[in-house]
Length: 473
Ligand code: NDP
Image (cartoon, rainbow, N blue to C red; front, side, top):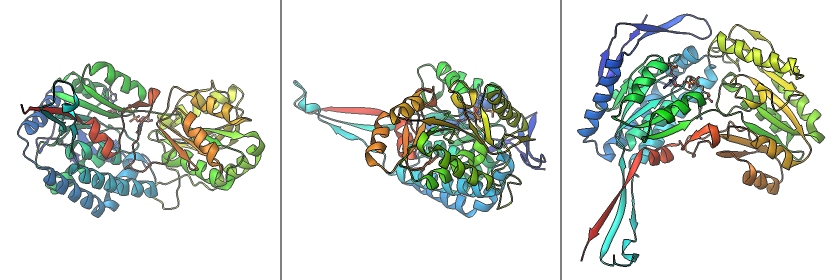
């Protein structure tokens, strides 16, 4: 059984205690990982700080390193995909997609390393400053702390580490305790790509402990976090005046208007409602369907849902693997049962077996039910009928979240009206709210977070402006 040490200053550091990482389908132990104590967190931050102070990598060198890392990720795609299947429980098809996307995220980051620039500021236009010339440049913040979640452990880490390194920062990274194994592959790849020791330091251990130590450390200049809103709020409260980016949850609304292509809409809602067993922050969850086409749409949804294959995630035919744990599956099942006890009807699915939840469609739901108003994070979608678009948009906006939404319509005016009115960080037209390309700006409003990812945009948040004024008189 492989035992993994923390990575501090390029050294593998084995600590006194460790924890096991399990295969989420078979339950077998995949490896053991060292648990960080406070002293290790301090050492990791010290390494990142020292490396930042002595940094001599040029933008072109950063480009070359990240570009090489992207190519190495590509070469090791199959090996990486298998680790993701094991530690996350996602299917091999989903795992390959994640590995491919991680390649793109690193490539995009590498390209951005050559584009860090500034702008001339027309200071001479200010009365009394006629002889002055000014401009600003973007400079790195320093030590960036990246805290990442279990559901997309590799690509979401690349979304933080890639831009941080491209912008000239150094990193302390804490992956989710359920899924730290892919992190060790990424560390190996970064080293092989030529990233010197100390630029990325990897520490593992429970979020509540390690997270606290990280938040207390004033040497960290920025926290970039993806995870649950509760932890996001805690990070915001405890980070004081330091810079934070938070990518949090959602209970994504999707509107199916009466003029939509129902076949495509149903296929899309099934695909995006159940991908990664519904454990995606932008998973289709609330489906607002026009009453005129509700029955036809629902029949199509049921037809495609019945084609979903639940089972061994390593099997190429499987479309849904297990949830991250049986505990989470039990929680999802409780939410379904609670909704049913409050009047909801199960159209299809609804059962739980160990860590598996059968893909589930619920109708006759109320806005106050947890399956509607909270983030379910399981393969469950809810059907909410409407008569007027305005009503659907108002209900879609009636949420504490606002990450992405979707609208299906064949009318450009309807689509653009929805774009204007939907209060979410992104609106997807004629595809589910779950669509994401790694180069696009991606971030939420309300409790879905602060700031944007996508390497170009993440870099803006991982740098500070420095203004330069010359007195030429
Ligand atoms: P968690 O918030 O439980 O964990 C995320 C990370 O935070 C883990 O590394 C965890 O460590 C760590 N952590 C836990 N407690 C603390 C703490 N007190 N201080 C600092 N760090 C802490 O989220 P999940 O991993 O369960 O991920 C699911 C959530 O992530 C969902 O809400 C989902 O919507 C959201 N998400 C958002 C995305 C976005 O881009 N907006 C994308 C993907 C997911 P440990 O594992 O050790 O507990």
